[in-house]
Image (cartoon, rainbow, N blue to C red; front, side, top):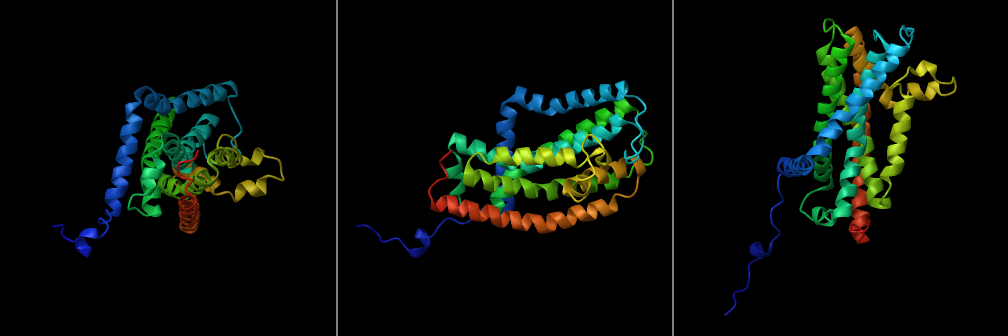
Length: 281
């Protein structure tokens, strides 16, 4: 005789804790990335090739005027910071979109989205590994640049460097979460987001001072959140002070932008689920 199941037996399984969910997704992404060892190494070393390019450019045009260099002793030192912050921007702003796109193509996004996790937990997990890897790449580039440029380590505000790096990654994750929403809605929306981030990076003073821009572009460049990331790290590295204002603006941008981006991502995920379009790519 069949026994009727109780209400407790039919109840949904308990939802895992947020920390456990995030750790599981981050560990999965790390293991997947590590399994392609050559690509993993190539991704980490690519920025060093760009640094070498900037180094030889600085040697070719030795004696670049110091105006607008924010205390950098050479153009190479100026551009090296741009490359390091660029690594953080790349992973923070495009990492989650790349992961979602890969999930779509491999057919695992639908399985991941139906798990008992919130959209916020899913965002944290997907952006977790790119965030850590971006900070690792940035640290590697700065170390290589310091050796090549013979930078003096005295007078550097190390707390300022660390604080601005973390605030930059957190604030710029806003773009990453929004790009994830674009991928859910438009499948290939990451292409447009990536192009936009690249343009903003150049206009914000990544590899040349914004004072060299046409006059009509300078006002736009000065209010871009990416500029505060570049200025803050350069101030902490080359001047040892003056980074606090940039850190404050990055914190405000993250505090305002991330909740808005999470709402957009959650609604995009809900809409895609309702349309049964998670498996489409």
